[in-house]
Image (cartoon, rainbow, N blue to C red; front, side):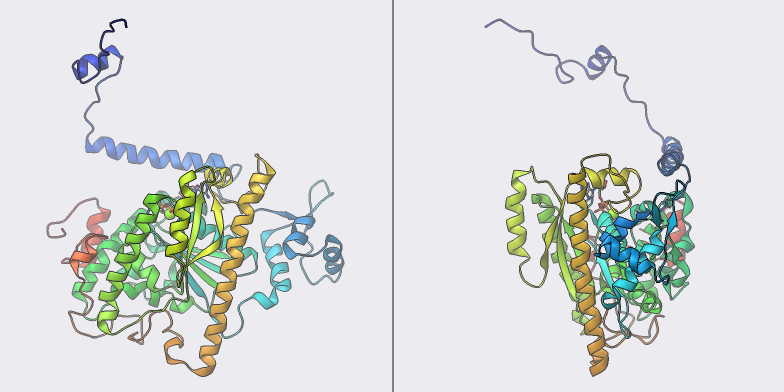
Length: 483
Ligand SMILES: Nc1ncnc2c1ncn2[C@@H]1O[C@H](COP(=O)(O)OP(=O)(O)OP(=O)(O)O)[C@@H](O)[C@H]1O
Ligand SMILES: [Mg+2]
């Protein structure tokens, strides 16, 4: 065997010598001013990308449907549709510029859907079913699930409110709004969190998608993680976990479904979202670490709810909790094993939805254009790939719709029998709810968290006045005593 000169690496020759041989410059020190400059540059870049992706306008536009697509959506023959159009009481669409195709806007499509699906819509006496999409693991598909669910449900004729509680504002971005530059504090849930507002109504805005209203988020929402514990220590009887629950009471009768997207943490805002909800959907990719992370989520959630509710003699009942197999990669051999673990773990009350969302180029491609599978009007890749992805989301939406309908039925039955625990204003929290959303009188110790549990999930703060703490965060400085 020929003798070979040992390969010189950074370890056996000096680091600088090695880098200069490769023509690599040693990294220059990076100061805080450089980071500030980078922040401005990235925000500008994001704005340019958004403009390029949404050209010719800078705002998103909802898809347009043709006659065949509308007939398919309604589940009827094209002939029946044209016949029904003859009556003239439903939108007739408009002929395209060439005059050879009739096109329907989303608003028109929804009008047809509401007519044809009257039996499936929210009955009188029922109110919005609130669904949180949660998992404290990042990148599992929470935001994608939240947006597709909202779009799918609105396409089926429902009226949906979407609340973004994630300071990253990814969901807000998918609605074509840039969180960093286009969302102010008063557009988010922050004034509600700070106690300046008691109803979320002030923050609700329409979106490009008919049938979906939005409460956006922005990085300044990180302030909620300081404001909530601060209020907890200062306001007697304040229940930090119920702020969103009470805040949406005022609008529950305006919507059919409220979808809440949460951050990848069991943070103060996530707890608020969960306790405001009737249902929970946890997107879970079949990976070992994802599975392990989900197990931790349930442990921490149980610890927290025990402290916040059970130990105070309160209870909280969810109407449904589902695991959604998300980002399923059919080429990953270990996925099948983890799916078995998931199926046997979540076999009882928390059930696995009977469909899988495939890891798909369709979803990835849609995100690049600030959208989802429901925004795509023409897919450049294989039609079969698109159909597979679209079918999976459609199935998920249909399944969740049936859960929503069962909650509506339960609400009406409860109202008829005057079941106290399900009366208006109590079903999302259980006993112990104050009459008004404002802080109720109670023991000052009420609601003080066990730090050892909560510190695993959220920063342990709380000895400062909420407004000051939030201002400090927004100003980018940590005040003395905040830590
Ligand atoms: N089924 C899928 N196939 C391919 N890519 C997907 C799929 N679902 C989501 N993605 C992509 O994965 C990334 C993360 O998705 P998403 O933002 O929905 O996750 P998340 O759980 O909300 O993340 P975070 O924890 O940061 O809030 C996005 O780029 C999205 O396009
Ligand atoms: Mg997200």
